Length: 224
Ligand code: DX5
Ligand code: ZN
Image (cartoon, rainbow, N blue to C red; front, side, top):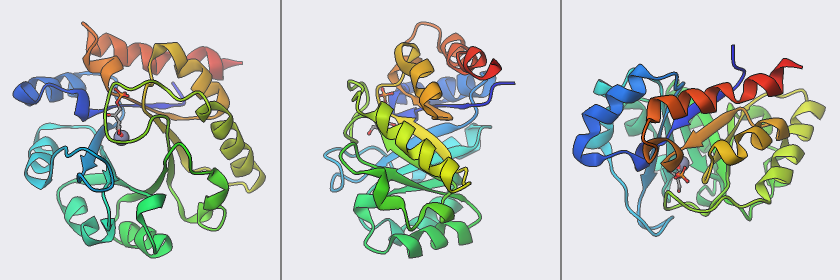
């Protein structure tokens, strides 16, 4: 069994044929479906909202990993949980009252995550770490799929992993942006255990096979 999770990102799917792409995810070894919600304010792009998420939830058999790139996420936490989110991740940079927001997510029964932009140091999570189910490190600036991986993410993962070990904590470490076969092994070795992949999966001629390859890549890393 592979020790890490793979979460294809819906943002890179074909919105004209969402059913087909969701079926593909259902038929694959993907663990979660990553769902990016963008509001045109926190990030310079708008993706989709509740009606789409509800439709996705009906068609998708995998847990929904909802990444909120929105300001004032506390206003919508319950609505996202109701629409089917299993994991809800808010941005550190978007939350004035992060602790309250995390408790709000947990009260819905969803797993609670915090995302950090590439420039935000992991040390800022020191006083909230023990409350988190997941830390999402952005490896591109949020807002768009298909961007180049920012290499400074690797030492950042190592720093986070080291700190988690020191504190005997084990939230998921999820990496989002520019992830693919070219860097998956390095990310896992550094300590990541959830890989989000948008274009690497959906722009591939064989997305099911690509998901399986991303899923298997860690085998060698974790075996020894
Ligand atoms: C970017 C999103 C990502 C995006 C990743 O703001 O948070 O989840 O879908 O896409 P790729 O894997 O193509 O970089
Ligand atoms: Zn995302």
